[in-house]
Image (cartoon, rainbow, N blue to C red; front, side, top):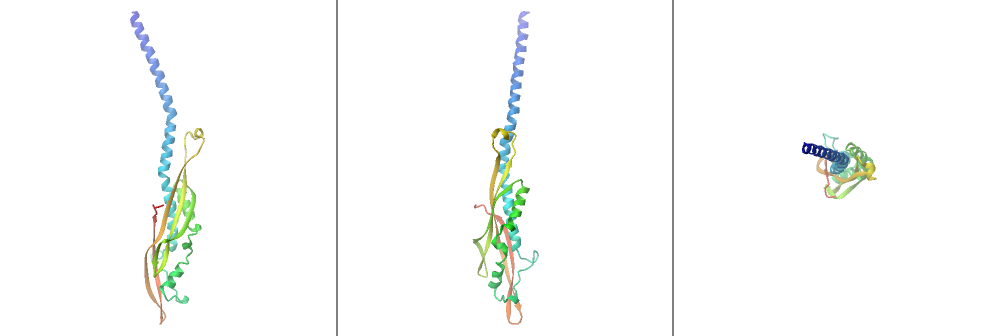
Length: 212
């Protein structure tokens, strides 16, 4: 009988040990789960931060393209002006190049870059735009530059143990987009009985520039 009691006592002791170990494992797991969440949040933010920067650069480039786009179904045709004495294609193209968008001012593209960065939970930190003559397309012998847009963004990472790390986590990214003249057409038009002017259509496109 004493042997039986000893066996029952031993079982009770083992049960107590298992319970304590299980409690300890649960405590460790509860402590580590937020840590794993933080690691996953950082990787997730870094992976998708590029979406915000790409959208920001493309939105700005699209706005420059819209200002320079002249097709009948969009905003008409860029007409030569007889009253200005534009009797050669070059004269018409030179006036086209006076469009303010060719200077790539930040006031045209930056608001859209900032808006699209915010919509993708990013913050716009750097914005630059400039005409790029290395990508220029000749129109009637005159180079028409592309417009490049470069942006940098950051995306905040919200962590469970942020106070313990004593730092804020951010996922930075950058992107570069290009607005470029894709197709142009020229149509002569009489200016009275003796002269001819020229009307143009300009079709612009945008793309991400991966070589950045």
